[in-house]
Image 1: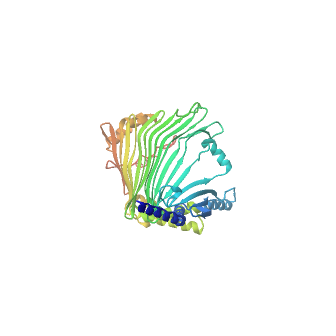
Image 2: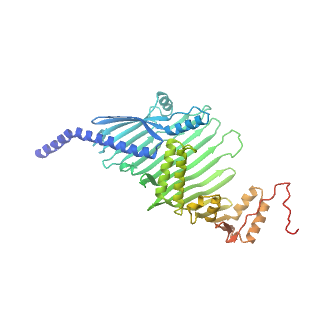
Image 3: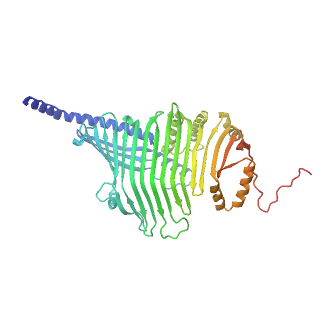
Length: 482
């Protein structure tokens, strides 16, 4: 028993003696890792530059303070363009902000769970800003950012913001109420992947006149990973339970109120070897904008077979523009940039990308409307962009196929709203007689194709009617029989 106790005490003594060395080594490792993370972030956001960085490393804890500048190159380009035009104005050199991180070294940072480090991050604010925020948050921190770095190269960051109520934001007595925020970001070594989940229960803006805008249960999710060297792909989504807007007693013309339920937006990058399928979806379960009521709104598109390396190169060019501002159109840099964008566009088109209209739809009490289809360019060649007939050459290679389905009662409602009910009935009867549309079980459907410069509806050649002559002008005289 006594032997076991002495062994335990010896182990504790060894650990206690070695802990300063372990903490010192953890601190050195943390500093190197933070530089790696910052390099990755700055590569993705080159419009941010480091104006100053101060890192003070101790045995058990360190402090890092970084001042970032936003848009230094962009603002300089705008100022130069203004000066060249003879209309110089007051353009800031950049916008800056400072971030301070207090780092506790592992292996037991702050005598908490095992980790390489625990980091508390805050924005450095002036006394005036602190006083203004204190009116909403009191003595609480407006935002808390805590990161735990693991021993394998990744970590997790948790962000939170407390709720407040009735914070004054306007000169007419407007107030803002905020229900708080919680978000968690998990990330891998070298930020090669990241997963985000965030929730904000809601917010509301009110005015003394009774006007209000209320947003409830907002959530954000994303799952991304690096591909093609520096392009993040994966999926992301934003959802909102409801939006309510009340006009109060302003007496302004227009809708009396507006509400939306089940608002969703999502985007996805799916990799298939060297190619990407990029999709975006936007939907609203129901929307009431008096007097119109809509439901089941969807706007879902996918671009298939995009050349991944070309997309990554395009994003690098876009980041450069955001960082440095657009190059002068008539200068050498401008010409080089235009050539690069043209080259990337050609590389994308050469590999037969396809736009897929997965669904564009909406419904009203009278019925629904839906559109699906595909659009692509068949046999693209770089020569199609040359010469005065370039546009016509591309039109000839355009292949579009679209299916349209509309409830007859809905179409009648929309036509009547526009004041063309009788004319619509006459036109519809003509289209049905010619086979351009099909009427079945109270629905109107048609299959539209545009191929080799020719337009067909339900397989029948269609030529849009010529526009009528302007009012008061006689049509040209028919001289075919004179």
